[in-house]
Image (cartoon, rainbow, N blue to C red):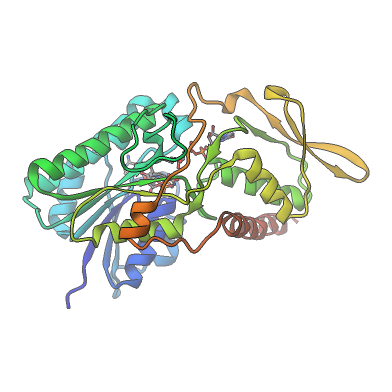
Amino acid sequence: MKNKIALITGITGQDGSYLAELLLKKKYKVHGLIRKSSSFNTKRIDHLYIDPHNRTNFFLHYGDLTDSNSIYNLIHNIKPNEIYNLGAQSHVGVSFENPEYTAEVSGIGTLRVLEAMRFLKMKNVKFYQASTSELFGEKYNEKSFNEQSKFHPKSPYGVAKLYSYWITSVYREAYGLFACNGILFNHESPRRGETFVTRKITRFLTRRKLGSNEILYLGNLNAKRDWGHAKDYVEMQWRILQQKKSEDYVIATGATHTVREFIVAAGKLLNLKIYWSGKGLKERGYIHEDNRKKVIIKVDKKYFRPNEVDYLRGNPIKAQKKLNFKPKYSFLSLVKEMINEDLFLAQEELNKKR
Ligand code: NAP
Ligand code: GDD
């Protein structure tokens, strides 16, 4: 049997790296689109790379979702069986500062991939679009969001992703492409970018545990998110493309926690009991150390978004039934893995300083 060929945009990101590992294990030939950067941006996938002069199933190509020709040529040359469009300007807060760029990459970028598939008449190629729970954003008398829930994006990122969601659906209907949206709720891991809230917290608390005196500045502590593990979620990205029919799926745990709850859970794993005082911008998180109260967390309005999605909780029933979605990680085992890996990293940093 010939190896299947996959193309992953966003292969250097959190999900891209886990998905590449999964597909290589399944004997795929994996091709990834990477951006030219003046410093190395391949840290998450370096362990997979083998010089292509030797035998390998892993190939990297320079390109960009803002560059139609690079996408067209790549798809034309490698002739993938499956395309996973994970590339995006994926930070919601940053999308308020760079709205046009976010629309170009996270919105029109998707159209560029779909157009390449259409021009190349690639009807047998399967396409996965990394859609998001940021499409929802407003709670309309419902406890959780499913595939039928109303969309109400609250950020330039959410709007760009809404375009991608609909253009994927339109190309499925209009041209008969096997094109699917995975509407994924927040998923984290030790590979999560350090400016997303969970990783910002685990990086900080583990450094604090090893003696750092920094203060953690955060925004909205009351926001609620449905946090799962990226490893569980990339497996669903693959399964979505293995179905007979192209459809859209919500992937979520079905549980929700505040940012504050995440901090408390992470602190507990490090034996740091965190107390809270004050409200709003005056809220502080502190610990008792050396018989003194030490403030370690402060709220800074810089980290609030101009518009916030307050509550996200997904309803994964369709994925449970049709994809047999059974996550291996719980909320606590996710936090624990992140804490353990970041503790190791903090120790390494400390050793280097000594
Ligand atoms: P991530 O870690 O931020 O990775 C984003 C990837 O996109 C990186 O490889 C990045 O490359 C690449 N990229 C950015 N701009 C690009 C451009 N102009 N051209 C080509 N590639 C570009 O994101 P993630 O957490 O893995 O998420 C993967 C996808 O799922 C994203 O589309 C995200 O919006 C979506 N999503 C994520 C979540 C979540 O909770 N993680 C939930 C729902 C949906 P560099 O490494 O060079 O920056
Ligand atoms: N990043 C960040 N930094 N978020 C903070 C901070 C902070 O200092 N303080 C509070 N928050 C709050 C945010 O306002 C938000 O309500 C919540 O923590 C989670 O923020 P992020 O971790 O940045 O993730 P996100 O939910 O905005 O977006 C992520 O999940 C989406 C799926 O729902 C990203 O991965 C998106 O790409 C993804 O689509």
